[in-house]
Amino acid sequence: MFRIISVMSILLLSQSAFAIRFSQQEDVQAFFKILVEEHQFDKQQLVTWFDQIHYQESIIKALSRPAEKTKTYQSYKPMFVSETTLSKGEAFYKEHQSAFDRAEKEYGVPSEVILSIIAIESRFGKNQGSFRVIDALATIGFFDPKRERYFKKELKEFLLFVRKEGISPFDVMGSYAGAMGYTQFMPSSLRAYAVDFDKDGHTDIWNNPVDAIGSVANYFRKHRWQEGRKVTVQANVSGDQFESALSNRLKLSTTVGETASLGWTPILPMNDDEPVLPFKIETEQGMEYWYGLKNFYVITRYNHSLVYAMTVHHLSQLFEAQLKL
Image (cartoon, rainbow, N blue to C red; front, side, top):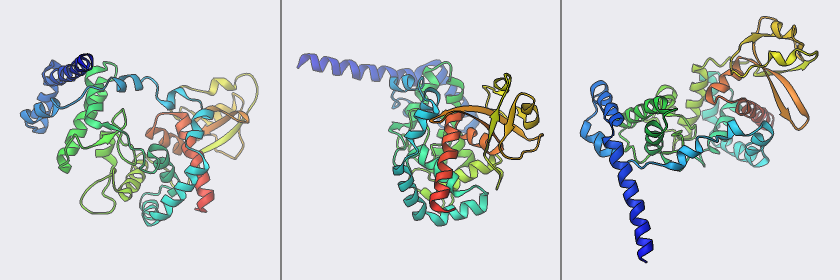
């Protein structure tokens, strides 16, 4: 019994130490100064909040192995492309069809693309994350030197949002990286792109699928989705230079004409001056070579990963066929 009590005491002391460290360490004090001077936060309120934040070691470990970076397309795609996903997606679409139709009309983004994003990001809202967002953002922002700048910014954006909406920062749950809701928006995306699509006076991507649908569509429009245009075109390759057209950067860094001189030939007619992102991906049938077009690049803005973007695109094609959109 004494051993159990001792272990529990150590754990509690450890949590208290991290709580004290959060509110009293120098970089947190500097963070407070910015929030008070630039955004008129009350310092005592910030101290009270930060004394309740819990450091999460598991978050630091999880950041080193995101599925989009560690899995191949062959192993990543089956996680989201399945008969179960298609069935649940059809039910979700039919339940909220009017919102999908309105989002497509207002923003020019196909329903099947919006549906695929919500499927992959949160399993249609069923898997929104189990971490308190404020814990996740503070843990990374103040204990991960490689990522601190970005996550301190996201923590500031989060606090601005909950203050505007009148929400307790401890009531908001999300992923280990602080992504939230049906859409898994980071706080900066939440403030920049989330919309009150049902016009009820609140922007709610956690409990309101209508707001989530409109928010995904708005995100894509703001990133310049091209209505009615293709996402990818497959290519045939030949010669001994075609691999040199590939790039590790997710950019439209070359053109169809430039890749033609290296052995690339699109299977559909394309203009020589069209900007493209040439990439390869291993499938069950072997290695395939593709041109990512502007709309493919837009998908990569949601998640900077080729396998993610290709999975979204493939799933959207299946939804389009199934729902006859």
